Figure 1 (cartoon, rainbow, N blue to C red):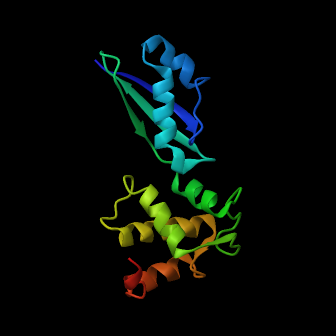
Figure 2: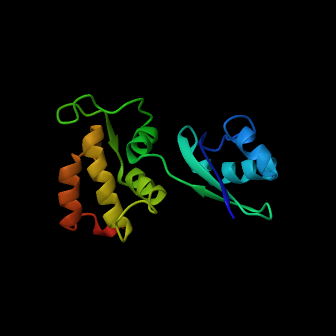
Length: 156
């Protein structure tokens, strides 16, 4: 049988305090090892809340499954924004570089449908539209058209 402990932790900064410590204590696992493994796996998400599942087997071995923050949170985090645009159609709040869009696509790759990096970057661009962020100085929709037209093929 497998016990599961789920929690929302600060990326790279989980601690033995709540919510993890009290939930893991009765399970009999080495809390220090679990916390260290969680921090190692969530280091790329520093400053963001990250969903984490700890699967504990009968022999007290454990496996960590890390979810990823929502795409909008990654976009805002990459640009240092507190919030997206209040009117994404008319007010732009930031500009993502192609490299930043690729970084976000790589972070979310397990959750995205795209079969390659180019397709996943197109998904990031779609999210940029709703957050009010441009990519490479262009609106998300214009960027998607240019990528599909092959203007960025040498960058993937």
